[in-house]
Length: 192
Image (tube, rainbow, N blue to C red; front, side, top):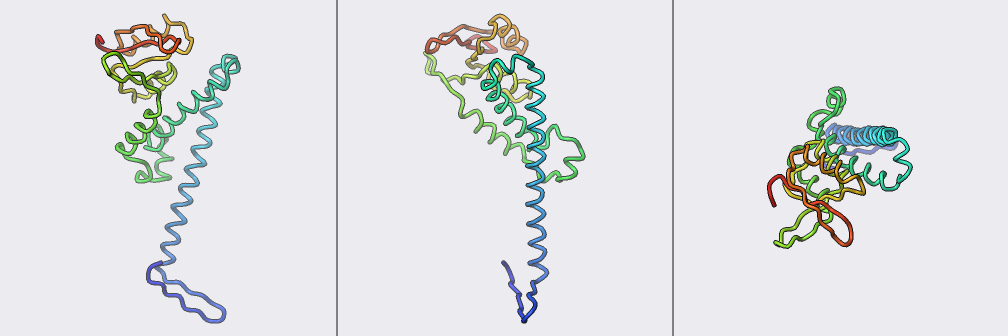
């Protein structure tokens, strides 16, 4: 601690006003972080419950797979909330605008998130990221999907419906591909 001004008598310890102010500020920051974590936990529980309810019985037929997908969706949503996006004004007022991350911090963390995704090297030595259909939808619906060409794992969904949805997002070229015995789609906005 700076400027330690502790004087001791038999019954009392005193601290400088500067030290007391530092402790109060640090305690306030810790309280904000604890409150933010509690807020995120409540939002996560609500989000997961809503997703499970909206899926109905389909969720219970493959709950482990859906839980993984929901966790991925939540990570992206949590990043957006950490920037202050999608929050009520009263929440932003409670924590203050400076509490939330900047655009550059969010982009760095989103890059970390997509860095762990599986990739496939094509014949022309171009490496493409493999997205699950659910990941593609989640990222696209949040406006943060950036790839113009990628590989899509349709996750045993009806291929014609998947292709129809992909085209609705502006991807006109869809080519079927087999990787390690599984069916995938190479998707692009322009001819590959």
